[in-house]
Image (cartoon, rainbow, N blue to C red; front, side, top):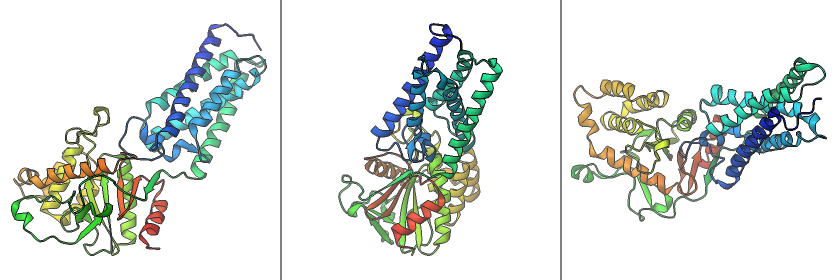
Length: 395
């Protein structure tokens, strides 16, 4: 092999390897320092959805840990005695980069800037490494060796993640809030008017040690009013994890149609109505989508389930307005949206979300039993149904 110490390509390789090492170290430190790092859901910034998903782990260990080892090995390969591992490691890093770019583009549908930077570094090292470590077979021979290692890495990582053990991407807490409105004060059923406040309450369920009670007849609902088990979901129509959870809940309710009901409480992650959301994390339009959904519920509860499913599938304000105008009589949509109950309920939902977010702000949040709450998105539908049946005693 040629001696390359001190050459521009050598220095470029060193800088890229250090950059890759630093990014993986940063993401690994975040994994162990952030209590919500392993929870899949919306709320939080940038890379949270990807880094909280099942794809952030391999065989129960953080992907960034393997990345850290690979880049440490690349740095060591710059020494005389370990130069022989450079080509295999360059191939492994490049194959991993291809796999995780595919996952973000084709499976998750979201991109993490930090992760993409690391993958870009890996692909750049591929080019520099080929120049740096040309074998006696020339550039073509080196390229074939690297391609072989890249293929091995891509297939191995893909098989391990696709067919290997699926990590838990949600958390169920044994207790809810320790702060919030005093017992007996409803955080979720504010009266819309003096007339409505005089209406006798319907069936009520309580959570959080009696701090929060919900009138099942007044709030947006899927399932029977008389169901033995009532769950409460806090969600955002534009949250990808909430959209996936909607499918899980649909399957669960279909399996237990008379036993379980679900109250649906929107929490827009949109600064237009949620003062706790940072600008860069806004789901623009979520406030309007929530208001439209609640208006439809108030005007025509029987039409609400289909409208809710449509918003989860296509969270477009324009499409939601068109469909709402077909449900609510002509000329009455704006009056329906002006109902003060709608904004009061959204403010109440946001307040609940903040109280329940002591350990993580991520949505969806699902109140399961009086002192049990699920944060985030389970890794799969079957896993979710199994856990819910156990929690609710439906097995």
